Image (cartoon, rainbow, N blue to C red; front, side, top):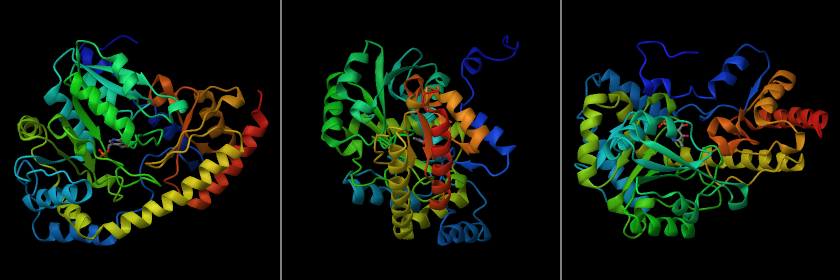
Length: 390
Ligand SMILES: Cc1ncc(COP(=O)(O)O)c(C=O)c1O
């Protein structure tokens, strides 16, 4: 296909997300179990929904301050201080965004000039590399492997550094691998960031969804606060994807610049959603814990089930994804996903949709009911039996 006349090189150079294709096929079929979706299957907890409704009824139909409701920013600063012992000034250093998606874009746009390189673990969330390209920066993909449990290592980062490197994008817990980067590794990454004077954009959207391990806020590491932009959100932990609310926190001089971009791009995050988010911070903890415990139960089911089938699956310690290898079927990940959908009506996402290093793996989301995962495992077992040594 040739580029239509009026389309920019920038837009043309960005591929469509490899996830959607499978949803579109699955939507035309009966009886599909979807392990493809990257969002909680839970609805938003009722008190949070009510807070949004009441806010609308009480006239929350206007813009808020560009930075977001002050009440919410104060609660966010307190939340980050309580959980991670990092202090941010709610007036200057916290910005409420339209999900982490917007936060990613404005953070990159504020720190990266054309041609600047940003180091990103591969495989990763589908938006990272396109977002870097949207600001004319260069995503430098660093492969991660099951040998290091898909953790991005300081050594790998160091070998990717060039004179144009400006930033590291750290995603822990990671989508699609569920990898949680551990303290020792993060400390070494912090050392690399300091030695090479790099800024770290830390996507911590899954911070509350960790299993048997701790989430470490990158800004809490010694000497990192002034070179870190922390991105967190409500979509995953509180089952609030459709409300479109997230936030970022960082040093005053960076948030000042980021806020200008947010101001011209967005004005302010949805007002009723901000009131709902405030309620989430006030009453959400028990709900988050219930959902986390249920994800953990499903995680053990799916990871155990896949390994029993001979689909080697590194234990994911965060988020809600399993990322097994499809190698023993002799099929590549694209064909595996297509045939599994056609033959057994189970939707998964080919690993290469998340970057070249994802080839040979598929992402299976366990944000799906336990009983459905049980049936999906039976279907996958049948499929693998049929295609073993294809
Ligand atoms: C790692 C990661 N970051 C960011 C996002 C975007 O989240 P939000 O709904 O807050 O825009 C997602 C959504 O899948 C994600 O997996």
